[in-house]
Length: 177
Image 1 (cartoon, one colour):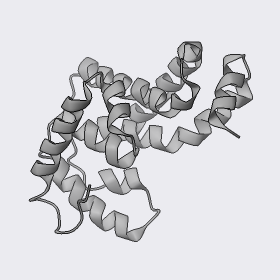
Image 2 (cartoon, helix red, strand yellow):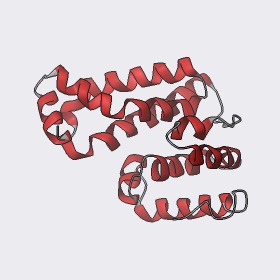
Image 3 (tube, helix red, strand yellow):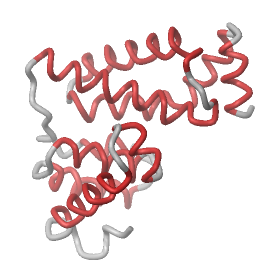
Image 4 (spheres, helix red, strand yellow):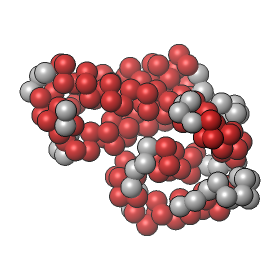
């Protein structure tokens, strides 16, 4: 069913429509949370808090077509809040980061993901978030700007800087715009 129709039904109190919306983004939400906190239980807590927040504030969503980017924004802020509260550092010490983010959809992706996971260790958190939103969630520059509350030019420059930092580390031919 169409996302916009499901959002309209969920706004009117249809819990089944909300469940369908969540099931369409469930794996991406969990993997994104895990990429921030690097702990399964904490990622599940953030995932659950995100779903609760989305459920209780769904009526504030103005553009039903942007449900996915809206809920990802909630998740990112929940993840960052969790890290601040727990005084944890944003780390990617584990080579499994992108193998889990990309999942087991393609063996080629896993080989590239290990290179990317290694390279991620050297990026600032804001660059990690932008790379994750752009290349894992396939969001446009405009959507990323809305999620992160940055001007589009700032997103483009951060993306460019992140690419420049990643380029020498990654295998030749992997990183394409």
